[in-house]
Length: 348
Image (cartoon, rainbow, N blue to C red):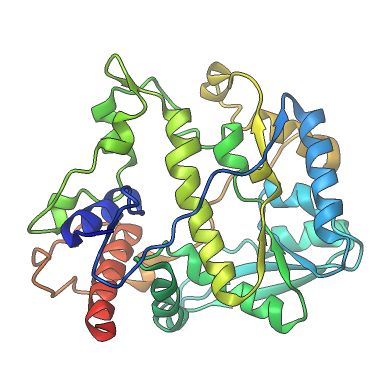
């Protein structure tokens, strides 16, 4: 494995992952990567998706040791229908003193009540990021996605409550056309790189690299296959984040949607017309008997509030004031990268 700190820093900022699995930040640090080589069930329509998820949920819950991570959206609400009555469902709620932030718990509580589940709330504070991020980064061998802290805390709670597995609705968006922003047009490759990249390395780093190989793999005639990119590059990064958090807590990770794939061509015209994730929406409407599915809300992380007063990185690898004008999520990535570099020196 080649030590190449500058490559790894830029890759993390661009892709939230180390694109080249043969490179590492430092000698003796071996990054963990998530394999995509596992069996998946083909799905053509909402009926086949229902059959696939129902059978997987029966298997996942047969020993009574599984709990559900329940958001306010339809993906996990669908899975809630097949949790045994009396099972526990956890919902994350981020807390910023004196500030009202996105709260999915009321919607999740309604799903839990309808499905006969015990609903429990896991409150997430900024102090959790300071406490748990180093643990997660050390195991991963790299900086982390901010959702890993929330998943880790929920997994710890589930373990303390006697559960050995957490079930998530993750991957429905990636596989079934929920990433409507990334699928909104036929992108030129340069346009897509600008659209997808989290933080352009030259905006933060004094010695940046442009990591374009993962994008170029999906280029044809100057345009980029966004759905193909999402289902390989984005999917591997997402799986790695969830698995690292659960594995670090000593709980099993389950994502029934991730064990399926779309057996056919994604209807981009339908998605671009406003009907994103149409197969999943059809299933949700069937199970809950309502015509309007809830809006998709990313897992709440109020980084704008939590990092509002952070002055930016001070390490010599970064430009001074580079985070001025960045979003909270972008600030987190720079903050996390700097924290990881500090930890490398402590571990040496």
